[in-house]
Image 1 (cartoon, rainbow, N blue to C red):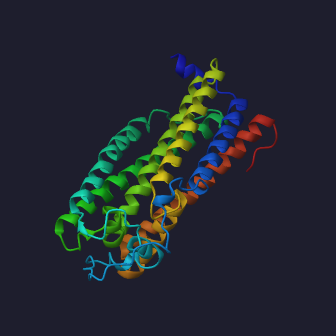
Image 2: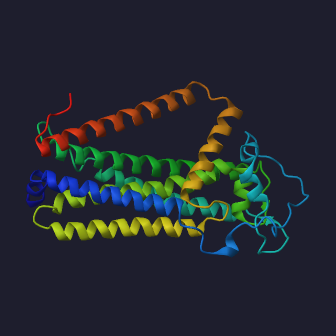
Image 3: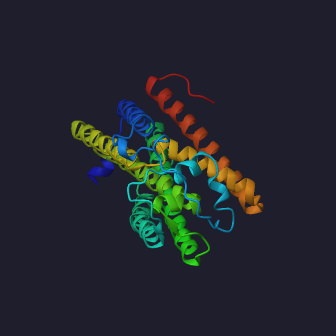
Length: 308
């Protein structure tokens, strides 16, 4: 009951502080995602010293898997620094182990996001500030659930594709083989998994601040800063693990490019067109709703006229 009282008594001044901290968190995360370089030079691709591609012919994966990785990503995959010798080995086992290792924690976060999705319900007649906070919380929880669900689904599809053995399993490393044969699944798992974790942490930070802001303001700020530091540190560690990409933002850019190439190769049918339309409609509606609720909350706090 004390938590419910603290939630109801959330003040507009607390909302402004929350929005400021969230904006700072977003800026720090974006800086970490786009600006932090890879601190390990030996893991970066050097075109001058990279070993040339082998002359062994590659068997493309049916369905356009090999065609989808044309361009700079294919060059990076083929020109990967060779620290393990010139011998190419069968990477199927390591590739399936990678997808299994990503699928299990993604499934756990999917269940956790679903369990807390309805824990902060919207009530009729509540203050605009509290309504804005709840809607932002639900948006982040839903985003975390969707990202992790896509990561689980893409991992399962990748394992099924590898078990069909219609590709060339040989490569100098598992990542080089995956980027050559099934780049869409590989980049989908990596991009959606971390993005879902960040959305889940953001939703927890909003709920924690809303619950403990009244009566425990310093404690709420300290926990919010701790979660922000954890998010930035996770993005930094993720960037250091990338070999064929500069950072998380670069990974997302290559992933979107691969999706566009797949659409051009396979010509999306009705389901694909409906998916694109629904994603666009949901994004526009959510952004518009949060913008309007933010204006209402600010007008309520300052006592100015409310937008129509």
